[in-house]
Length: 440
Image (cartoon, rainbow, N blue to C red; front, top):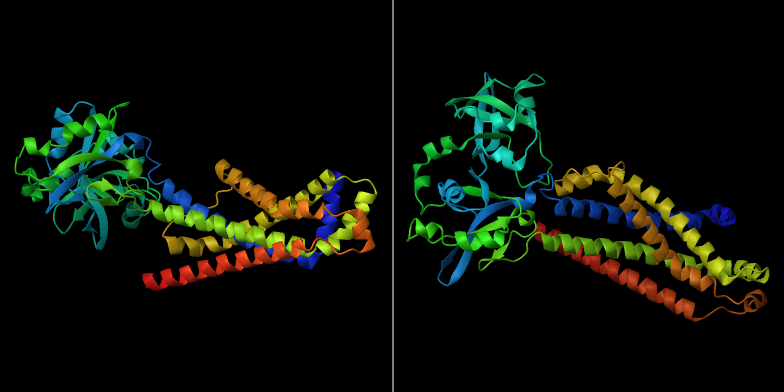
């Protein structure tokens, strides 16, 4: 192994220009692949910060008009308490207004902030971490407000916000009863303030009618309760209260809120998941193009390496050792490219985060990320180095040392790889331009 590494390092140093082109080419492909995977990870890990996410559901309803079924997230204001009281298997329910913007005032400071009116069970259900206060005392009174760390900093700086008073919409004064920690961007739950839901009901008395849908209702099931047992029991629940109501309700799991939120004719029909799959495919295509580029450059130098192979075989080196030598060279190049790729990603992440609206990070101290980076380098090295290794190690010493022309098929294979590489690259560029024009 020491000999293999020594020879590999000598080849890299001796052929500086070739090594640099190969390193940079592979590094750019790996960097693009890493950026795409970071975005995909953010998408598929939506709401993973909530420990009970597998037991939390939002109540959706289907309404049929003119033979077509439409799906909505709005429910009656009195649905939640009724479900909790009458349907076994439900641990707790939470009612929430849709996110809205209100003017908060502290002295001469007035800022518009976004938030929701929610039930007190909202914080225990989500196990939302508190920076100040506690979930059990979140709403100590009807004129209490829980605010985020960001909002607390905007109004009170580094001072404690607990017990301070804010005026809302130039009306009632609300006392800060808790400060919650800011959630990651990849969360379906958001808001900088939360006020007891009773205030919203008082302002909107029509929410007491079963035929009016205007709020969100969340449900947390008891442990090991199958939602398939609950859905048939609640499907016609609203009709038992108001026979004229159209809404037929069902539970929609938190794990599907972000990726499968598109409904057609009353049934889930995908959503953001199609973009996750598309960009994952594009990421692999880019990585494959980079590996093809590596293979092309390696096989293009076959004439140069042929004499080396011939002499080493003459001196007793078997084909197996040569294969390992060339694969090791590819692996070393791959891991060096990974280092350059990490630098490229680090430089591009601020702009990439601005483009995607995320707060992505490499987090090199996070074991799954380290394992993923190692796997990318390993796969790239094996994929890019396997064909050159088997091809170069197949040379016959007698022919090589006599200067006989090598296999004519090598040129055809290399040309085929170049054609594939350019075709796929051109298709990706055309698709990117079309999508960019459509977005604009």
